[in-house]
Amino acid sequence: MHRIAVRINGKAYGHEVEPRLLLVHYIREKARLTGTHVGCDTGNCGACTTLLNGQPVKSCLMLAVQANGAELTTIEGLAGNGLHQIQEAFLDKFAVQCGYCTPGMILSAYALLKANPKPEEGEIREAIEGNLCMCTGYQQIVDAIGHAARTMRMSGSR
Amino acid sequence: MIPKRFEYFCPTSLQEAISLLGTYGEEAKLLAGGQSLLSLLKLRVADPKYLIDLGRIAELAYIREPGACDAAARTDGPEGEIAIGALTTYAAIKGSRLLQGRCPLLPQTAAVVGDVQVRNRGTLGGSLAHADPAGDMPAAVLALRAELKAVGPSGERWIRAEEFFLGTFATALRPDEILTEIRVPVLKAEKAVYLKAARRPSDFALVGVAVCLKLGRDQACEEVAIGVTGVTEKPYRATGVEGRLRGRRLEPKAIEDAASAITLGVEVSESIHASQGYRSHLARVYASRALQAAR
Image 1 (tube, helix red, strand yellow):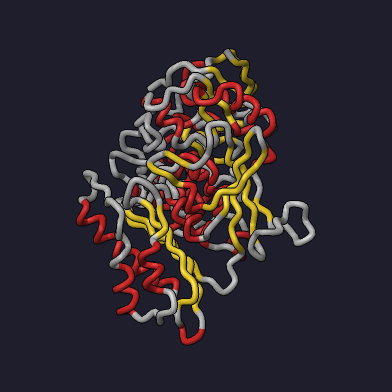
Image 2 (image 1 turned 180 degrees about the horizontal axis):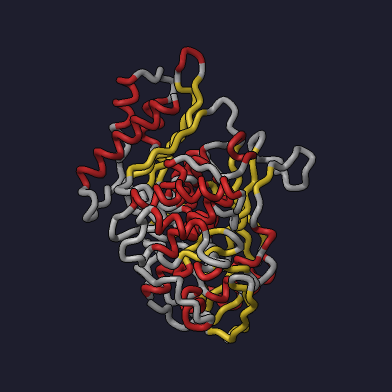
């Protein structure tokens, strides 16, 4: 067993874990934050996308021990008082069908908009290339991220 | 899917990693970014007893151009080269101003590996040492005639890219060696291109062709190196094509003729996504297009 300490959404967590424990299972089962989904479990779908020190990664392709000392953000960390503007935009633009890919999509979008507040459509599509929507609602998702970029720029938020 | 149990080490220096590898040898596996290895562990295709995580060795992540008086400059190396630490991520390579300006083939290739999340974790050294027969980076380092530094208990040695890939997931690294650095030349008169055929943008290459081309007088080919991936059991240099191009003017006919030698002497792979015939066709077409683009 290995002792790890991480911060998730600003809160400190520490656990003894088996080295083979995947980060996504750590987040869901030890930290009890179930907004991060297990989709394909093979590193293809991006439903388990989590921000590791601000960068999107697939938490099913990482061991929890590899994240020791890191700062993680999950979908639960985005909303403050009320939903985040990206979440609002996904509602406004009907970018949610079954909802399974949504947390990963929103985290990838969040990382994009932090680095690039005014993305072109092609840049939005590239940012979510690692996130699959099995409902194939991509157009609404791309629209929602563009919409979120505009509302975030107007309100001057990050 | 859960990996089998293993013992885990996370050394913080190269020396410590080498000594662990010396102790656990062939029963150990090195972990870099894990974007290929984690899948293999989960599928239990790989089940090492010991896992040595190189991810905390900060000294292995860098991109720099050693100056002439620099201790890191090699006296026998080509004039002007860039040193890349094995743990440098694809994202860092893609975003490197130094590489974009001095060796753009590498960032161009890194940009088409996997997707955003994979590029944030996956590393150049990991990709090369893993030696996937359809990996993108091997094609680029072959075309660049890169040199790879392996460090083991008895010191370091340099391996030429074309002698590094021995087969599917097999390299010239010895069981007690760690790939620590990749040296690529600064491209001056050369133009370089990587083109990849894949079913979807984030997929592995069905065929990938990297070309590094130097034209001389009269637009004749003075020097050329071509790295090919996805076609057979290992990434390789298309020496047959290179031989047909040297000294010739690169007119469309000459390029077509030369490109037809792209699979000369290799056993072309077959999979559900591409028959031998289709893959050979793709290889010829992509070699031709890459040469046209580099001209």
